[in-house]
Image 1: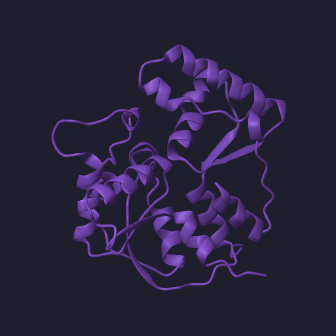
Image 2 (image 1 turned 45 degrees about the vertical axis):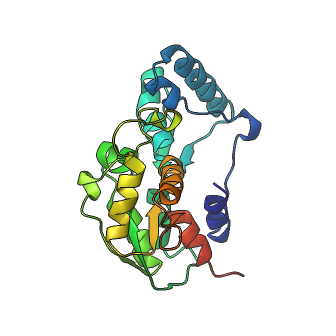
Image 3 (image 1 turned 90 degrees about the horizontal axis):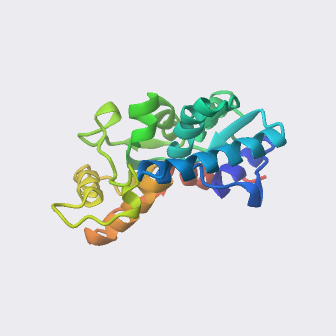
Length: 221
């Protein structure tokens, strides 16, 4: 979130937040079966967003994006919602992000809520290319992406049977030979940070959010 705000500031975009009034969108709770608490959270969020006459929301989480942009519509929510990769890709194409290109190798993980539910796969790659990335794709990418293991509330559960999904995905990233695994989902990042430790490959692979890559390349005024 801090990276996104820094990028917006460098691009001349003013950003507002709800601060202490901002709460979880409720998606993990709903997926784990507590529909009542989800709806209470959603209604409170919708009220607070409406109270400040918010015209547009940019989320740094695909789960929040999908929930606000689709599920909240059932509760009368009408505010425009975008994921930050789509928002920043448009800024980059308009030459508004003061970013210098620095070559690096990486592999990119498509989060389920971006690519499977919302068909967003080109914009993150376009941003990475603008940053100087040589993207080495994993076998399971774009619509055929592999889950990180956090979806459906599983980030709050513990797997005990079979191979942990996050380790399996980290192994796929390792097979590309790329030293950096890029995502743009807080759930995925958390799972991969743990997966890298459990797969004992901290010396050969690091996970970063796409926003981190852009911030590293911002031209400082």
